Length: 170
Image (cartoon, rainbow, N blue to C red; front, side, top):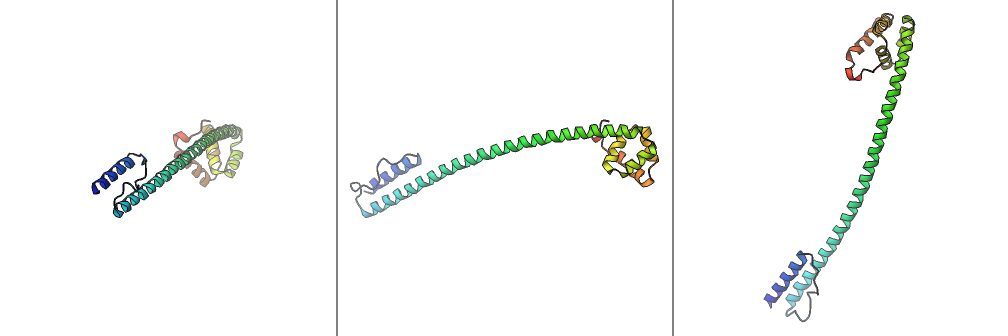
């Protein structure tokens, strides 16, 4: 009797560990010889049912995670595409600004150095530096000569701090 119970239990566990469902319920009135055996078999069947439910939940969660992963991948691809578009727009904007600053530098270059100095002093600091970088050095020197000492020093110092790669191609 105990040998039959152990054998039944081993077959059940072997079948469940391999992912096989029991062909027939373990609790069969013909196979049970004691109340204790029946209680153990009912307990095993309950645990087996719980394991089946857990496996179903895990399978559902895996599917849900795959769906979420696909959505995240789509969103990442869309964000990367937007990022690439922004980089292109920024490059185009910088190119356009560079062209305009180059044209403006040529205009300042043709001005009277005193008049150019007055106008440059009123400009934004960064724009003033970029304009002076685009002007021929001899004329830029004359413009700096017509600026007050503080502004001329500040702009001159900016020339030494500008990295070579950031220098516009005017």
